[in-house]
Image (cartoon, rainbow over all chains, first blue to last red; front, side, top):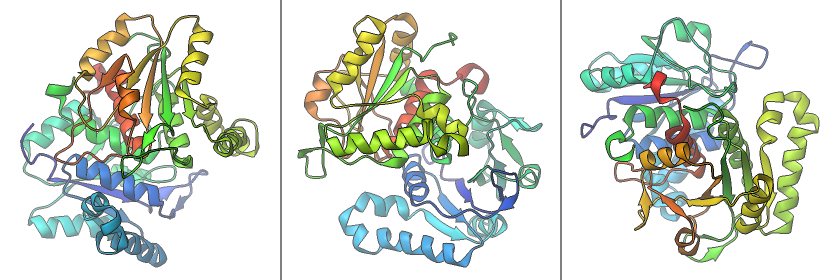
Amino acid sequence: MNVGMGSNLYLGLVHHPIYDKRKEVVASAITNFDIHDIARCAKTFGIGGFFIITPLESQVLLADRIIRHWVEGVGSVYNPTRKESLSLVRVSRTIDEAAREISDLLQTKVKRVATAASPHPRNIDFEFFRKVLKDSDSPFLILFGTGWGLTQEVKDGSDYVLAPIEGKGYNHLSVRSAVAIILDRLLGDRNSRY
Amino acid sequence: MNVGMGSNLYLGLVHHPIYDKRKEVVASAITNFDIHDIARCAKTFGIGGFFIITPLESQVLLADRIIRHWVEGVGSVYNPTRKESLSLVRVSRTIDEAAREISDLLQTKVKRVATAASPHPRNIDFEFFRKVLKDSDSPFLILFGTGWGLTQEVKDGSDYVLAPIEGKGYNHLSVRSAVAIILDRLLGDRNSRY
């Protein structure tokens, strides 16, 4: 694995637009465990940044407060390892805003990668995307849906759609577990481990 | 991958004996997200069962109440996929009790596998343990520590100690993320995926 691989990879946790249980498009609430678990995974795998995407002003403020508590506040003294991981977290109102922030920062267009628990006609598998990551200088923003997942429109409008993690007839992982597995498949040190 | 592989594998989430921040041996509190996330991973990968291990009577009652809510109560109607995953969960007072329950059920001694975020002299890697799992008829109980991890005694007394998941200078994954990654490394469908 190249040193620095993963640093051109960004994560977006999408709270809107996503589906709810009845397949209606909604905005979900922020979950504290999502922020911590995914930030810790992002830090473990050397990810460039992690965007919490929500259009709701109250949720933007809540996310900012959680991040500040751990990065600058009492939490940063109580548990410095959380400061390291939460430092990777940003808040954006929309997927476009997150993508623009990355593109502006790196002065090159970011490519969008959707994830889903069910198959999509344009699915690429993990082996293929590992190669894309390795060979490309582009930044990539991997989008994860909360609730019942990213809308069809978001998937159709992405540059790539990653294959689902296939279970034994059960595909109901938490988004936290899905992020962990996907990052390990893409960036985990597979030579020395297995 | 063999059909049914994983069903001889059991998970134990240990709330005692574990270390706290100051490396004192304590009993940690149950975390609702641990139960759900790990049960959903267990169901995804076809695991035989998932033991919540806690000696505290109040915590045993709490875990039982959570499980019953989703398996028999209102939750089983609201979200049937949680019923499927939570049906895999049992509660035990000690690691020994969980091991005995598996050994009694399968009429053969269960082997214990410890996990940790730092190296151990007897570490085995994931490739090796995949082979062990494939070639063996034994049941295995993989132990995950909450808090600051399993005690040295638990690790030393286990039949195997799995290698840590190596991050880029940061090894502070949540136990939920560690379980997801370890199950995928051991049981994930690697032929078609990557």
